[in-house]
Length: 298
Ligand code: PMP
Image (tube, rainbow, N blue to C red; front, side, top):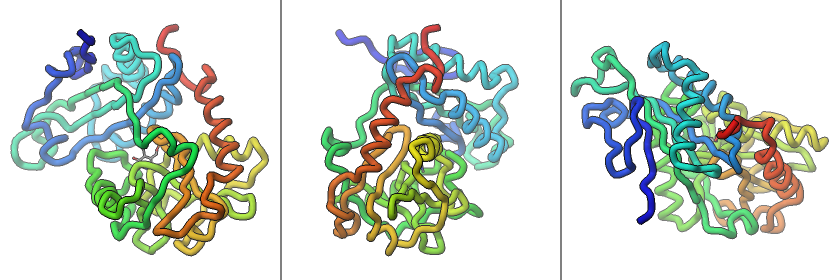
């Protein structure tokens, strides 16, 4: 019989089928909590420190106090321990911190202790040929929540905004949705940042559009600069997107995915562009580099 996944919940490892939280947890009742999606490649947890730093920035913003005994170093160790328990060297990891158990009112004051969950599993966003052929996408009518609302700058458990957009993509029969900001500029995908290439230069929307400051996006920008490409954060219009030379998404789960068609407008030749392909190659090398992450087994 296949061994069940071991899931960490508040200091204890449970078999997947036994890993449960209370129905009074405000993560469930109100989406009150934050999370990180992290990947391990060949025994290296890519940018684990950066993910934990972002998690603590999210909890700081929503004033969710992680107990002092769980320092960032301890949180890193909990993630590593979960991978070791499951004998995983390649994994998609979900680290979740909820407000914890309270009553039926939304007041977070009533939740004395956060719930901490670590799931180490695998993920497949698209069918096998998405990386090679690119995906189709649509501009959604669902606007990204702005920075003065439940902005995706906080990586919170409120993903209904993204889910609404994804539902529209499903209905339209395309792979992905792209959200605009409230001013009508391109913001991001449902769980991916977005880049366009125009005359050999890369552009991505600034985070004040309400996009999540993506860890993959940051690494891709560094890689692109290293390869000698110009990279700039700027507002991108739908017109610029449709007429871009190349378009691609970045994200921990997505990695780098070329976009070949948006709202039935074929992007350039309809094939992944040269710069996108070059970045995909370099990114594959980067994630295998031990200096870019934390080793599961020291
Ligand atoms: N935007 C949103 C809304 C996301 O959920 C994600 C996935 N975490 C991203 C962008 C990409 O961020 P990262 O590269 O850090 O995974």
